[in-house]
Length: 249
Image (cartoon, rainbow, N blue to C red; front, side):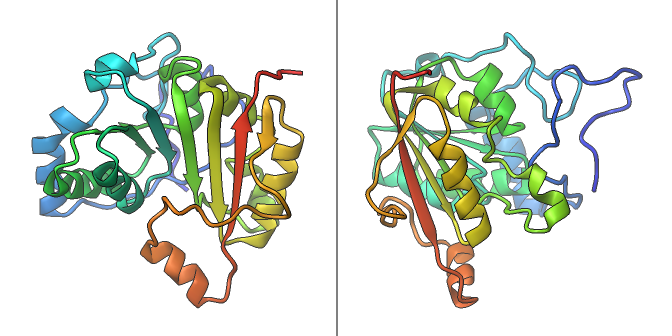
């Protein structure tokens, strides 16, 4: 696995637990390179870095109304991949502003290409480590919905500590969500789904937004190739949804 911390001669100040992603090497296609160079000035949010390549400098928060040039509901997707879900959502809801958080540049470039073709101008992209985006880049109580669909399950026992949904993550999600805001989760990995539910049951500031064992499939999530692949392999897709309360226990 490639480390995203450059050799600066000092230890990173912020990273006290493993990141939930593995850096992937490889060149972007010519089309992706063009998208990055030609569309990035509109779609990419400038990020001030700390010591690591994908870090966010503390104290560098952005104002979402300034970012989008209007006051509107804000939906953030963490781990947007190639952007299929969020581009479709942005195209279908022009009165809502969307922010995609992803660490893989090729996926961000593909997202920009598709957003530009769809005329989705209510979308912006952030290339950064998601927990730091929630902790440092986004203001408190600035997000109406937070989506995390099919984050890496890190299914080997020795790797489960890298899963994004953990007790360390929930205070960051609670921080950015408005009271009444919604956290939506989905996975095709049963063990991870059970862990997510256990973590959220104990999370301060959240209450379930569903009855029974699992939430119904979120109708606002388009069926992507990734989800179809999980279904084809016989894995059940499990959704969870939680509402931000004023309870901080």
